[in-house]
Image 1 (cartoon, one colour):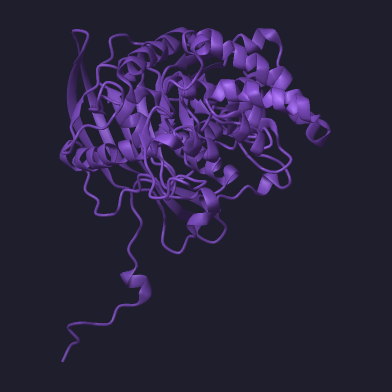
Image 2: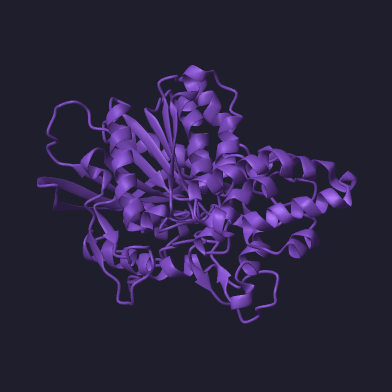
Length: 487
């Protein structure tokens, strides 16, 4: 009798790794103008050349792209590649909060509304001025290393930049966008990635960009690492402590009544008296230490005794616990306007960030619903909104030094003097403080003619400033203007 169920060899049962695509048609109206667009949700397979097999699959990158149908003019339409940070974050935040044709409905100040949550048309979308591609790096969203490939090979500063660059090259090539103006927009660690990409795309592929947009920037990690011997973060976080204390009504009246003037005063104090005092270390005499502690207390809403006990050095994790400790509240790291509470009010570190908890539910729910319901993309895999890759991220090329992709951005600007950069800062962002960003760009060592290509914007909101309605409206205007002026 013939064998009706022959045993298959491993090669026979091996399934090819393929790309998946779902294209859907949509329409929206912005300022009385109708925009018809194609949305594509799917994956692109990254491969490397292999001596034996020719090409070896490495990872599938999930993305969502929006391309306008029948643009009004015949010139090549710009395309903007967007990603968030972490490292380990998917692209959901700027996608459904700022740039995409749909956005999560939040309260006007960015506070979460009660579930179930809603997705609404986004009148502020950048799709009016640029096609959009939202990229989920490997191990975020639906993106994964293929079977038998280790995910951690993509979890490093350099390898992350290389894999995202390869995705961009493939998408640009397949969609015939080499002649189009091209932009990057990154948020948080996404700005670290964007700065690195600006140089890598140029040097590896000859792909020159028109613009880079940095939302809540961190390029030079020395500005944010509270480690022994590094006094710089204490100086650079101080103005954000002041802005936070102002928001929570903890400053003396003269400072409370003049926000712009107070911010200017604390910046000047941080650059001069405060940084000089920290520079002296143990050689700072007691009387001067008390004087500096009093001034720091005035600018932070803390007590002089507490400032003195910290050695004049206030770690961000202590600040979020201490400012409202007497009220039994903690404040947010991503957005210090938000407050929460801990089981242990006397502890040194907060249990969780109340500003992150406020956005996790709405954005996670709406992304998972939107992908299936509106974009018809079927995938039972967990959509990784934010994987904790930070502690295992590899910095091999930065041994015995701090990560600093500002240097790659400097090289990109040096090689491409037409490259424009726009930076968005939130006054209440304790993750990537605005004064630290100013410090980084003040040390780029470029001629004035090139520095003129860099523009900074400031908002009375936090790390994800667009969750606040007034900031969203202004960011939309700034982004559209930036695209119009830079190509």
